[in-house]
Structure formats: structure tokens, C-alpha cells
Image (tube, rainbow, N blue to C red; front, side, top):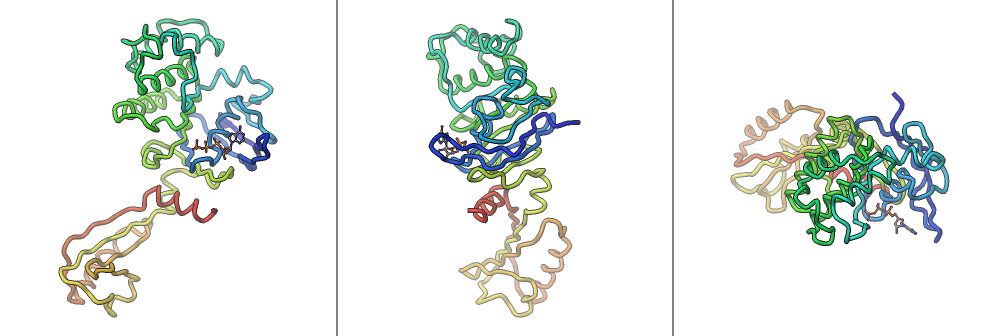
Length: 308
Ligand SMILES: Nc1ncnc2c1ncn2[C@@H]1O[C@H](COP(=O)(O)OP(=O)(O)OP(=O)(O)O)[C@@H](O)[C@H]1O
């Protein structure tokens, strides 16, 4: 099937000459959850704004379901829901009207029942007649999501959805994402919280300084770049890694109390049993053992570092 979003050689230079995107190409498949990771100023919001037809590209193009986002703006925008970072709406309007109006703006017929259902799903129903300015910060974030969902989009963009929100909203948000995924909605989110991307995304894209460094399936990425470290606490300190174990490329902690062994996730753990046997034959007695897996964060930091 053709991708639902096709970003083709996209570049963006702002009026002041700043190049925010440099030749970005990316296909987004129907129904997937794609997380875009990148440091501040990497170009994530610029990319989203262009896909949503709110910013014009300097070169390249974006197709949404086969339609050009500049030429066929109405058609493409109607398929997209965008949860931006901040609410820019009339603060005196009620929750219900704000969300309902959003549906109308996207060319859909009024449907109070559906709007009420969305408000219930987002625990906003009790506040439906309150003005936005009477809501807490977290509730305003919920309104942003309700607005984005008001016209039943098939693609949802979440721009840093959980930055500065409390645990309850974060949990609700991910439940909602799971529900939407089950309905076949394609979800693209940007986040600084790498563990979130790790938990929820099917694919991860890494953006830095306007360049898309990679897009890869999360599991493949973790497998390819992930490593594990086995930390073996010693009962008594060693002055250095014993000669007998030199073929293992072990590291010794500064205090001489922990031996560290880094291994590839692809290798399985058969080697570990051998290593432990050799350590025991070398007369070293071990205390506690623990393993640590490279997180997506480590991978991300090393990728960004390499290209910096
Ligand atoms: N209207 C504009 N004019 C000039 N430069 C801009 C404009 N909008 C954004 N930029 C610059 O483009 C770069 C990318 O910004 P963008 O908002 O896309 O980054 P981001 O990855 O979303 O960052 P963050 O994680 O901080 O939201 C930044 O250096 C920003 O200063």
C-alpha cells in the first residue's frame, strides 16, 4: 500500500536565511506510530508544520494520501489532526464550543454526540460548559487533544504531547494513543522523552540540525545498536583485570570492586556462562550480578554526538 504521508526531498529555509530542514525524505506507513526524536531546534516542529500545510516548504513536496499538501490543502488538512504544544484559542469560549468549532473548521458537519464522546474519553465532559480560561493547564492540554480529534482524522500529530504534563494525563494520553492505533489512525509524535518513544513507537526517526539521520524500526534499532553490560561485583578488590581473563575485554571499575563486561545483544547469553566459569576458575569470588541494557537514549546521544 502507498504510504499515507510521503515527504520528498523537503527543505526549509526561513526568511532570515536559517536552514531548518535539509533534504528530508520520509515515508510514513498507514497505521504506524512513528516517533521523531531530536534535540531542541532540530526541525521537528517545522517538519510537522509543513506536513500540516501551515508552513510552506522552500523545496521538495509532501503528499498526504497521494495529495499535495500545498495544492490540495483542504483535502489533506481534513485528514490530519494536530496537537500543538500550546493552546492559541479564545479563552472565553467554552470547552464544548471550542472543540465543536474545530470540527466545523475542518469541514465536518456538527455532531454534538461525537464531541461529547471525545470529551468523555478525555475526562473533559464535566467541564464542557466551562470557559477555557477556567481550566487547569493539564485540562487545557486535554482540550488541545479533543480539538485535534474533533474531525476524526486518520493521521494524528502529537508535538511533544507530554512535556510538562502530570502522570495521570500522560497515562491517559498513552491509553488514547493505543485506542487510536487500534482504530487504524497513523500517529506521529515528537518527544524529548526517549523512554516514551521506546515504549510506544513502531519506528523511530532521529532528526538533528535539520537532517533526518535515520528512520528505523524500533526493535531493529535496539538490536543493531543496543548493547548490554554485565556488572559483576567482587567480594574483594582487584588491582587490575587478571591476566587469565585478558581475552574477555573486561573493564575494572576505579575502586577495583566491579568487573564490567559489555556484550552485543545479538550474541545471546551463552558467552556469559563461559565467562563466569572462567572467573570462578581464576579464583575470583563474585557478589551481586546485574545487567544494564543500552537505552534508546544512549543510542540517540551517540548518533547525535557522531554527527555534531
Ligand atoms: N519562523 C522562523 N524563522 C526563523 N527561524 C525559525 C522559525 N521557526 C523556527 N526557526 C528555527 O528553525 C529551527 C528548527 O525549529 P523547530 O521549531 O522546527 O525545532 P524543534 O525540533 O521542533 O525544536 P523543539 O524541540 O525545541 O520544539 C530552530 O533553530 C528555530 O530557531
